[in-house]
Image (tube, rainbow, N blue to C red; front, side, top):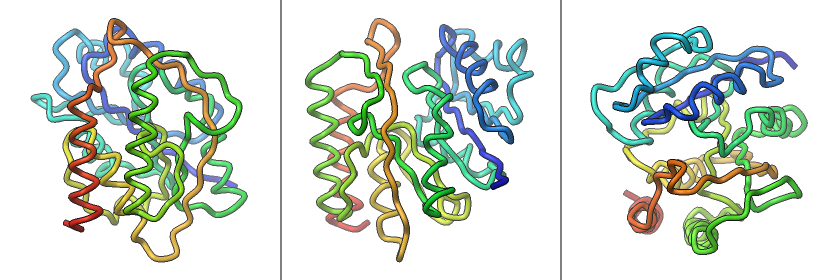
Length: 233
């Protein structure tokens, strides 16, 4: 099966990890790749790296003049993506680009439309970190499943892969981490859509290492689930 994978990398103040991440993306086993980086107003030197020494790894570079949020950066990437399939890749090193082939496998074998990479499914390696974060993620997934009528194990995962025509047909509005429940609920309402999950590895990082999501984003996710799920806005 011949295909092109567009990899959207939303990026904000990731000077410490962006070079190694782009090297790993470049060496990932997918042959035909379109690497899209959206810098979301970085102020720490990331932008200079992307425009300079790391530009050789990037097919399309978009620069937001100010920090608008992960969801806004993803929307920008989706709008210019040209690959047959589109995957989201965080700019840190929590998710391994070597596993793109795991993500694409359900598409090849089962004609999947959407594939989620679950941190809670399967036997891949996981860094042991925050207990309450894992509880929060599982609660948000359960709460979202109640309104989407899906049986996902990891709604909040970064690794989401879409057929291009599927994700481009959805109107997305959330600027921050509300992207996750919004896109999940909206794809669940597409008739006859085929959604799969695969187990992936996860090397989570601490706040000292640059982790950005916090409890406020959890509250926002609950609001978004009610907004798009219960109120159907």
